[in-house]
Structures are given as C-alpha cells and as structure tokens.
Length: 61
Image 1 (cartoon, rainbow, N blue to C red):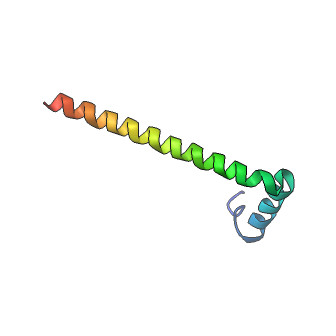
Image 2 (tube, helix red, strand yellow):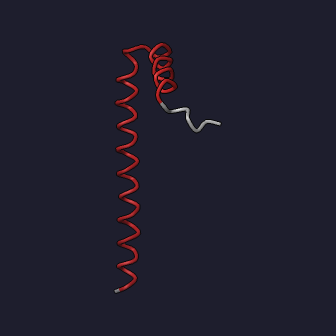
C-alpha cells in the first residue's frame, strides 16, 4: 500500500507540504538538530560497542 510513497511525484508533494507547514526558516534548524541527534546516537553506540569489546577482552585475560 505504501510501497511507492517515496517515489517521484509523491516525494515532491511530501517535501512541498513540509515546506508549507514549517516554513523555510525552521527547516535548517530542524536539520541541524537532526544531525546533532544522529551524531550523538552514533557516539553512544560506539561507546557501548567499545565497552562490550573491552569487557570481553578483560574476561579472556
């Protein structure tokens, strides 16, 4: 049902609706916040992976 939602004309309509709802001033702020959130999520994920790796190395010794 939603398989072709993000193709061609549908994507253009979605982007146009976002521009109308949020305005051109809010979109850069939103994207900057989204970037910071993704960056923090990746850092936290890496920290968890490092912690798991270190704990398994400690058990081997």
